[in-house]
Image 1 (cartoon, rainbow, N blue to C red):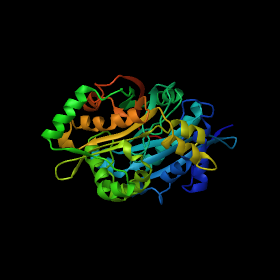
Image 2 (cartoon, rainbow, N blue to C red):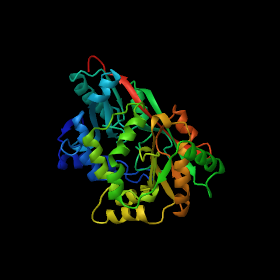
Image 3 (cartoon, one colour):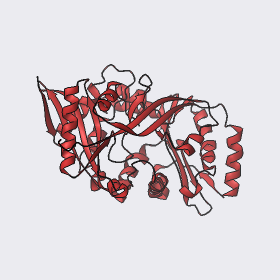
Image 4 (tube, rainbow, N blue to C red):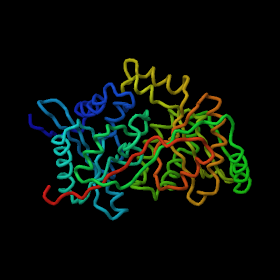
Length: 380
């Protein structure tokens, strides 16, 4: 049967089918970590996701004999394009069977849409902002995924390269051994930084209090710290408020390290959470009827792995040892909670300053991923 491409309306019903196809494609795969279905749907609905203030997007599915065989979302981030001077469209939320006809039809449809809107290149996989999943897995297909990363079959890479895509940015991920004690070098550096720069660590036990004290400042700091990173899309006020309400209430606050200066101004933050990999696999992305039980156990039950979601340090203090303060605060928490391993999640491969922060730890590079770029053909 020929491949049929249909536009997916951005409503809960049609996007539900779109998201569930992406999960069903990995049935039986022990390394895949499904997203929360409701969260993925809401990300793609303009009325729900404030990123649509600065983006536009359209979703399509590929059908064969009426059955889903692929999906793709085309995204245009106007702010990033204005900052870069480029005319890029992004592809994301993309999955497909191992079939060239399906893949070609999906990408041709997305590129035609981008071309009609004046775009001349396509890059991906990327989301609306850096808060979404990005980067196609290129190495580490037999490593367990995380809630913050994309898992894909090896044939995805074969198909994008077959279509003429080239790597445009690369990320690495480390699995880090949590030490039995805080390394002496970190203690020494942390003490010097604390005294010399007059910094201190603040801990919270109330989600409401951290929200009131530093909720907005936290995401403004992320905007500052990440501003020069590949494809970064600065978060708007609406997006900041959205992420404050979405993420701060669910954090296990002992895993959050807040660093302030002598004026109580936020200068650094480290956010980690217990690994939700096994919980999401058991829930299959569903909250009900029993998915929420698995998620609660993942967050508050026994867990041997912690995910390092983000580290942000004010640009003028980067490279001055502030990260040592974060780790001297968090490592004792990790030890107390029985975490044996930490997942670094995505780090740009050419970001040497980020790579340096792991030099005190035993680790192994276990996953690599890339964003791919291609010029949109004139005759698409």
